[in-house]
Amino acid sequence: MRIKEKLYKWIFTILAFASLVFLTGIVIVLFKEALPIFKKVKFLEFVMGRFWYPTYQPPEFGILPLILASFWVSFGAMLVCVPLGVGSALYLNELAGYRQKAVLKPLVEILASIPSIVYGFFGMVVLSPFLQKVFHLPTGLCAFTASLTLGIMATPTVCSIAEDALSYVPRSFREASFAVGANRWQTLTRVVIPAAGSGISTAIILGMSRAIGETMTVLMVAGGAAVIPKSFFEPLRPMTSAIAAEMGEAPMGGDHFHALFAIALVLFLITFIFNIIAELISRRFRLKLGFSG
Amino acid sequence: MKKNIVQKIGFSFLFLCILVTILFLFAIIYFLGVNGVKVLSWGFFTQSPRDAMTAGGVAPVILGTVYLTLGAVLFALPLGLACAIYLCEYSPKGYIVNIIRISINNLAGVPSVVFGLFGLAIFVKLFGFGVSILSGSLTLGILALPLIISSAQEALTAVPHSLREASLALGATKWQTIKRVVLPAALPGILTGVILSIGRVAGETAPILFTAATFYLKGYPKSVFSEVMALPYHIYALMTEGSHPAQQTAIAYGCSLILLILVLLISGVAIIMRQKQRSQFYG
Image (cartoon, rainbow over all chains, first blue to last red):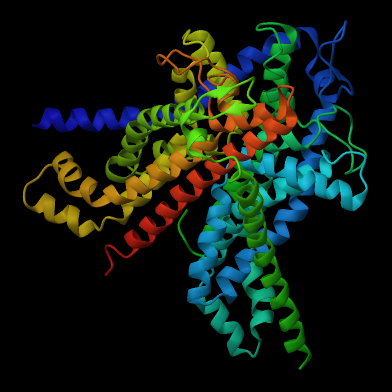
C-alpha cells in the first residue's frame, strides 16, 4: 500500500516537469540549430544587418528589417488593441450590469477563440480590399492592414487580462472614493485605474508579446517585403512570416535553414523577455493589493 | 455639473470600445457566413478535392484536422492532468513549484511558429517520424499542454477541501482520495479544459506547417506516419498556392466557415459548461 502511494507520487512529480523539459528542449534546439550560422555571420552583423537576401549569391543574412517589421506591425496593433481591450475591460467590469455582462463577456471570449488563420483570411479577403479602396493604397496587403487585423486579434487577450486585474481592486477602494464625493468616472480614472495599473500593463505587455509571435495573420496580410519599415502603408516581412514562408524552401541543414532558426531564437528571446517582465509586474501587483504571490 | 458631463463622455467612450470589439466579431461571422455558405453542400463534406483544388469537397481535409486534434489531446491530456494533480494535490510549497509554474507560463507564451520549428527539429528530423500525423500531433500537444494544465488546475482547486478531508477521515489514502473523490468532482472542469484546447488546436496552423501538413494528398492518410491535409493549412495554401484564385478563394471561404462554426460551437459549449460548474460547489 505504502509503496503504491509513493510510486504514484513519484510518477506525478516526474510528469509535472514535462513543461520544463519541453521549454528547455525548445531552447536547446533553437541554440543548436542556430549556432552554425553564427560561425559565418557574427551575431551583431546578423541582428543589425540591413539586408535579408538569403537566396542570393553570395547571400546576405541581416535581420534588422525583419525585427523592425515585427515591432512596427505590433506597435500598430497596440494602437488598436490597447484602447479597445482596456476600454472593453473597464466597461465590462465597472459599468455593465449583470445581464449585459452575461452577454458581452462570452462574445469577447468567442472573439478570442477564433483561430489566427481565420483572422488572416478575413484580413486578406475583406479588410485588405476595403482599406485599399478607402485609402487609395497601392496594395491592401501592408503593415496597416496587418496591424489592424493583429490588433483585433489581440483585443480579447488584453481585455480578459485587464479585466482580471480590475476585479482584484478591492471594493473598499471604490467605496472610499465615493465617500469623499467623487463620481463614478472620477473613481474610475483616479482610483481604480491607478490601483489596477500594473495589472493593466501586464495585459498590454502580454498583448504585445502575442502580437509579435503571431504568425499566420502577418504571413497572409503583411505583404512580405523584407525592407526596413518607413510607413504604415507598405508591405513588410516580420520575423514570424519570414520563418513560416521560407522554411519550406530552405534546404535542410543549409545556411538559410540555420539562419531561420536563428531568427526563431531572436523571436523566442524577445517574447521570453516580455513574458518575464509581465510575470514580475503582475507578482508585484498582487503583493501591492495584499494578495500573496 | 461639469464632472457629470465628463463622466457621460467617458462612459460613452468605454461603451464604444466594447461595441467596436463586438462589431468585429459580427463582421467576421457575417462575411465568412454569407460567402462561405454558398459553397457548403453535402458534397463539400463528403467528397475529396478534384481538378487541381478547384472543385470537389474537403472531406479528407476535415478528417485530417480531426486526427491531428485527437492525437494532440491524447498526448497532452494525461501529461497535463498529471502535472495539475502534482501542483494541486502533492506539491510541497517552494521553489520546485515556482520553477514548474514559471515554465508553464513561459511555454504558454512561446510563439506558435517556434513550436513548429521545435517539432521539425525533434520529431521530424531527430526521431525520424518525418512529416506526419504523429509529428504534428505531438507538436500541437506540447502547444496545448499549458492550456490543459491551467484549466485542470482550476478544476482541481475548485473542489472543496472538506471533500478531501472527509475521504481521508474515512481512512482512504492520498491516491484513493484523488482517484475516487477529487477527480470525479473535478471531471466536468477538466472536460471543459479539454474542449477549449480542442478549439485551440484545431485552428493552429504554424505548428503543422513543417511537421504534418501538405496541400494535396491523394486519398486519405493511411497511418500515423502519413502526411495529412488539415483545414487551417488548407485555407492558407488555397490562398497562396495554385493557379485558380477565384475558385480557390471560394473553397477557402467554405473551409474558413467550417473552422469558424467548429470553433464557435466548441467555445459555446465550453462557456455554458463553465458557467454551470462555477455554481456547482457553491449552490
